Length: 151
Ligand code: DQA
Image 1: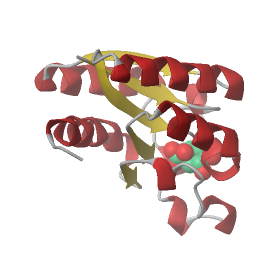
Image 2: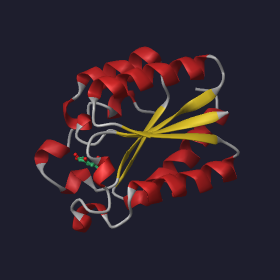
Image 3: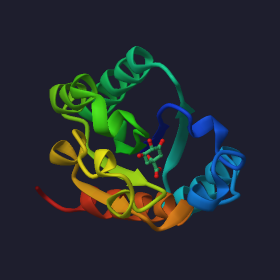
Image 4: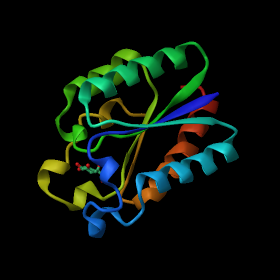
């Protein structure tokens, strides 16, 4: 079975963008962390990033179909600022019935008030916030565990 690790806008800048907030790991480092954890969990990982809302929506739909077909368990998703703005991505996750664990590298609740609300969290199975890039492998472990349990 496979799992999607999805990253939204500006996460391609990881490593150089505000390292005091997001750390020095790059998105390639995050991919490596995810590949190691996924292998331990016996999962194939598909790792994607886009700066474009429509592309992300299409990928959510695609992955929802894969879950429905029994080929995938869900997605680990860092929506970046789309968490705070995108009702369209929330509707996509809900509509596609995609099991999502939402990740934020930084502790969004300790930052500006506009980062405190997420449109994604109400349709996520779980949320990992503020643990740096460690949040990604932790979210993979959580998603795998949720997939083993009945709702
Ligand atoms: C982020 C937090 C968001 O508020 C911000 O817009 C990002 C990154 C995080 O991983 O901490 O792009 O999702």
